[in-house]
Length: 229
Image (cartoon, rainbow, N blue to C red; front, side, top):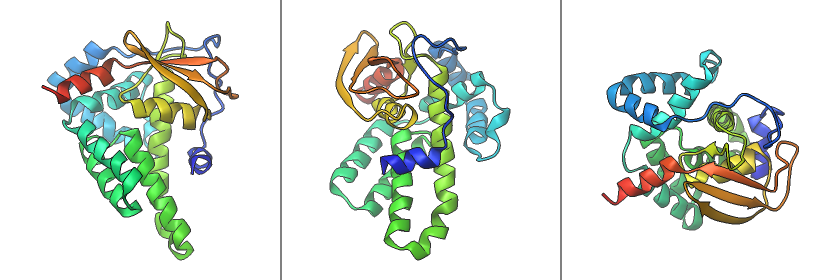
């Protein structure tokens, strides 16, 4: 399944490392939160462009960041719904996982765990009945392109170093980014360092050669706190 997702993403060959010189666009959380409060429709409009299969090329880096990270301010209850979906992954059927993924996506259509669950669902449908494979092609493309854009957007926000961590909206973003964008499957340890998650990697790839990677979990911690209010 992992190899299949990597294949259909058709991700760029951009090499990422703390030593690579490239333009970074750090996430301004206060600015995004203010925009979500004062002009949520703007974020929704950007999200619409972000999700269209052939329309995202017109968005700037700042607009892509506002669409993805701003999406987390527009709906409530995503964490609880995501937990139920992940439970269904462990214990339920493929159809049950797809139903739960739809519930997550109804709250936030840019949730990476739910998107991957939908890709997995359509892949299993096509595998179980090859005669139905043609019916899943368009849906697979929609979710694969959406996931690709999200992971590319995350890559714009940092370089994985402690000084310039990648910004994420969930722990799932971290693992999905490492697995499907950096094509690294071995993660030895995870630890919290201030407002960052540090993952100690068990291997390197053509896209990332450092022994560890940092993620800014500012928004992750906020969402967790909001759940207990």
